[in-house]
Image 1 (cartoon, rainbow, N blue to C red):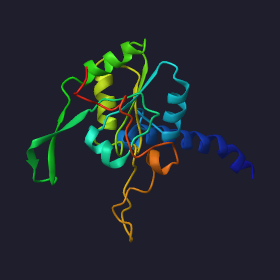
Image 2 (cartoon, helix red, strand yellow):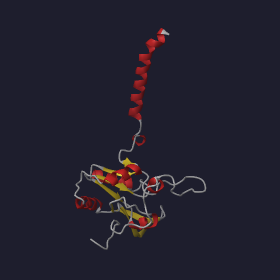
Image 3 (tube, helix red, strand yellow):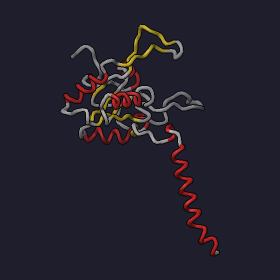
Image 4 (tube, rainbow, N blue to C red):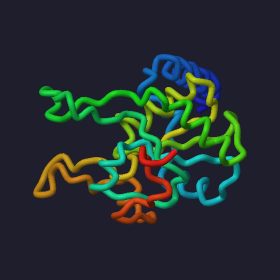
Length: 194
């Protein structure tokens, strides 16, 4: 019994060293996503409107088919659809980055009396192709508090079963947050007005 009591500090030290060694070898992809926030957190922050700009970064045509939430302040697409070029590999029209994205974000901030230090939350369909990249792009462009909604507006697709391919797992819609089928004409990205 006495030997076991003497061994406890040694075992605790070994456990601590193992924990430290493991934490330094965990790949970056396994660590928490520092840019991402939950749908609930995005809704909470956007509801308070304390120095927060909530941006739907989807192409407006996508919004017409999938739905919209008035919780966002504005729709500024990060990637836009080029209907003159087909992407055969992905089976869709090619996407290109909105060349005015950062400028349009800054203008939206200024219109609301905010600056580049404001919290900017971006949301796309699933969080991966436009949400996270748009937040990273904004941070690289000097908007230090840019974040994105993990799982986006529509969420992740089911991998197997009769509903395979349907986006029913998570995301804004599936988390029961407010949304509607039609976009708000005052918030949707439009080229028919300044």
